[in-house]
Amino acid sequence: MAFSGPPNQNAMESLRRSRIRKLALLAAGGGFLLLGARIGASKLLGLMLYHPLRYSQQPFYYKLLEDAKQEFNKLSFKLDQLEYVLPGSNGHEIQKALLLHPSGGPPPEDLWIVNGGNSMVAMDWLQFFLGILTSLPAHISKPAILLVLPRLWR
Image (cartoon, rainbow, N blue to C red; front, side):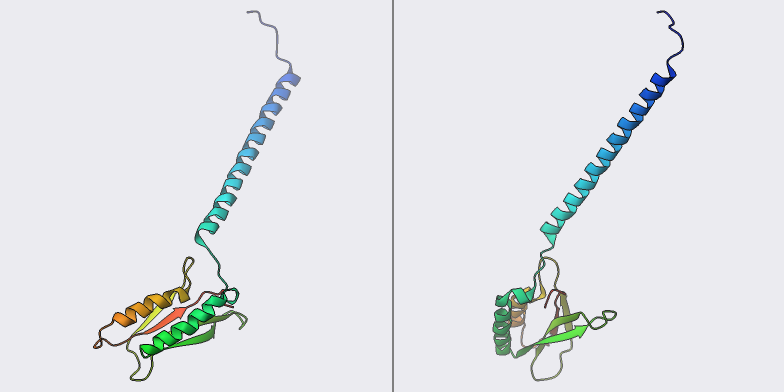
């Protein structure tokens, strides 16, 4: 091999810039790919876990509530709808809850609190508690049950 002299500085600089440009494009492409994967995973997770439900758009829930009131009345329980405002919301966000409590007699000794979540709203628990209260022995004190509904009750 014969030594051909010092390398052309312009050619070396051009090669170095080309490599840097390719590396920057590769890094940017990888970053966009990861960002797209992250956004896609978030959307997919939201579709799988969170199913918002507005009761005002579901008229069968009001029928369910009325039917549940009648069923609980047969067990000497009353189902009341309560409205409340969370601290710091300036009174704009009215929340709702259902209070299921024994009608007549002494006040209940226990309060069970149930919070509706992503896959189940609080009213979906009514049938469950109907079964529980039906099966409680007579000598056990009957609890009051507070079903806290999500913010989507409007």
